[in-house]
Image (cartoon, rainbow, N blue to C red; front, side):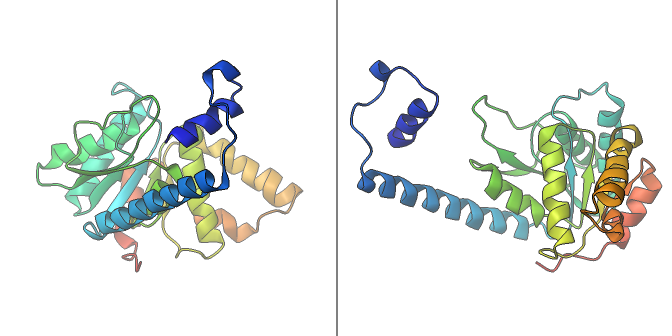
Length: 240
């Protein structure tokens, strides 16, 4: 850990008076690399064991900044309750906002419902929301994203920031390239997601030809809860 701190101090240009004076040796770099690989391998192992315990689930993504008075928080909460009622575990990133709304909806449906958190450790500590019945925590975003990619029969994306958009593109790229089987990706929030859809159609497809027309069928934009639930219930169980 000290080695990592030394590297970061040099990168962000902290004055030399606050840094170690000797250059890193190959042995130090090799030792640090082995430790990081060991931590990552452990995260993967524990992560796959965690999702194996919950084979039928729906994952909710969305902003951590939306409070309980926001209409999308309320929609996620209600929809999660109905997803739990349909017999699915509800999965989120474990934090506040839309994540909390999803876990809260499942928890309120039944204390026996599976309300799961796949959490991330951040420099500014993000506490798990109080509606989680089972959780796992990760140090690395990329290992967490791999586990979330294999964690559900359907993915619901509510309005969010860079993290939500990153998670959407991560999974849609894996589906588009055949790295994972096709899974329902439902974008909840017409006002938020329609502009993205317009860019995909007008810019990526029509102007630059960087995607195919069938790629536009990899996701569904809707706010209709009946449509969403119908898509979820018709989705086959994942084989991974």
